[in-house]
Each structure stands twice: as C-alpha cells, then as structure tokens.
Amino acid sequence: MNIKTASEKTGLTKKAIKYYENEGLIKPSKKLENNYREYSEDDIVKLNLIGALRALDITIIGIKDVVAGKKSLPETLTDAVKKIDENMNYLERSKLIIESLIEKNLTDYRASGEQIRKLRETLELSKDDKKEFISNTLLRIFPGNFGQVFVNIYEPFLRVTIDNDEKKKIWLKLVEFLDSVDEVEENDYLIKQINNSDTNKLDELKKMLDTQNKDVLNYDENTKNNIVNLQVEFAKSLKESEELKQRVSKGFENLKQSMKIIGPIQKDFEEYLCILNEDFKKYKENATKICSDVNEAVKDKLGFTANELIKTLNEEN
Image (spheres, rainbow, N blue to C red):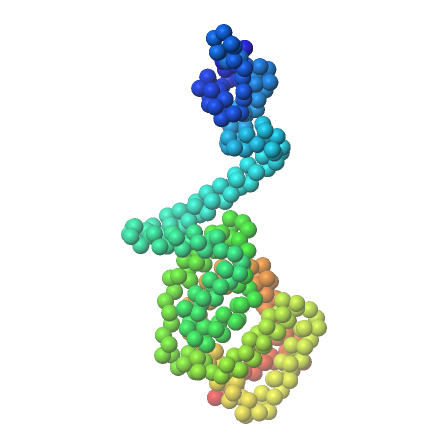
C-alpha cells in the first residue's frame, strides 16, 4: 500500500510517517520502477504502536528500543511512569513554592531569587540533610552552647520525612519561619552563663535529655511509677532542705529567663515539628499525659503536687 493509504489506516500524517522512517522505526520496501514506498501490514502495526506510544509521550529512543527488541513494552512503560512521577514531583514542588510566595505577597522581585532558591533546595534535602539544616539554623538563632542545648532538646526529632503535600507545605513554612527569626542578643546574662559552661556539664545534660526522651516516648506504667517515686522523694526533700529550696528557686528563675529567649520561636517551631515528625507528636502527647498522671499520683500520696509545693515556696520567698 502507498503512503496515502498508510496515513488513512494509522491516522498519522504523511510527514510523521516519513519522520518515523528516517528514524529507522519502519523500513518500507521501494518499487524498482518508480522508487515509491510500499507499506506492509507489519509497517501499519508498527506505525499504530508508534503513534499510540508517542501520544503517551514515550520518547523516540524508548520506542526504538521496543521495536528493536532491546526492551520489552512493559519495561519501556515502567520507565515512562518513573519519568512522569519525577515530572509530577518537580511540578508539585514548583506549585508549592509559587503558592508560598503568593501568600507572602512579595513586591520586591530583587529579594525573591535567593528565597526561591533556598525553598527549592530545602525541599530536595535528605532526612539527614534536613536535620543538619534545622540544627545549623537553630545554632544561628541561638549561638554557642545556649543554641547547642536547644538543639539537644529536639535532636532526636530533627530527621523529618516529607511524604505528603501537607508536610511539604509545613516544611516550607518552617524554613521561612526559621529564616525570619533574628539571632538573639549574646549579651543576655543567662546566655553568657550557659555559653561559659563546662563542656562536661553539657555532655551530661545531653545524656539526661536522651534518657528523658526515651522514657517519654516509651511511656508505660513502670515509667509512670518511677517518675512518681522520684517526685515524691523530691517533694519530701524540698520541704526539709533549705539549700535545695534555694537551688530550685534559682533554677526556676533561670527557666523563666530562658523561656523569654526561646519562647518567641518555641511554640511555632513545635507545631511545625509535630506535623513533620510523628515521634515528636507522640512525645508531646505523652509528655502532657505524664504531667497529668504523675501530678494526680503524687497528690494521692502527699496531698499536694511537687509543682504546688514549689509555687508555695516561691511565694514564701
């Protein structure tokens, strides 16, 4: 059959048929007397397949592999699906960043380039790289040992997996939020005090935090009883020791000062982290439950909680 008939049978234009021939996808015979192409039924089958695959955006190289028998059709289609997934991920990331920028209603285009680059790069970070990004940003906000203590509190929960659209949006919000927070003043007394702390004390604090995090995450009746017993002993000691009262009072004063420094970012930071890390969400839920359970158990044993006792002592002082 001639090219006109081949075009009618396949729905392809003559130009497309000639292009596929030039690419070596079909090899029609030629009549000796006039050198006209003669298309066989096999050529029509191939052209129908080529047209269908091109409609699915399968590349010419991919089609050549199928026609030449280098790859099976399922393998080629699987490769195409992977490519489509990559393109969809790319478009989704671009859409999220664009939506984020629209929300900010940016008017100065000169300041936008760096921000767009940063948002795109952070979306592509691995779990470990995300952890490093968050840690380094927190250390920028809270320089020195003070920042390291803050990082140590959250360290087990900084590896985040972004596996859905909600997390992608929250990740971008977290990046923008952290980027907008200015460094704290290093001349604050408490920051100076912590930054001058002995490294061994910071190591001990990290070990204590690691143990505490595990206890909270694995909260059970045994953990509850241990904490209750410690609270009961602490409350008894606090009533009997003036020195301990003074130390606790000073500790609470430092805690208040610390909260003035970290408070402005802690609430938003933890809300974002709860969505990005399921373990941290569980940690926060368990911590709330522990406070309630332990206070109730201690009150049953002593008639008051350790927190109520501390509050009374502070009022007395």
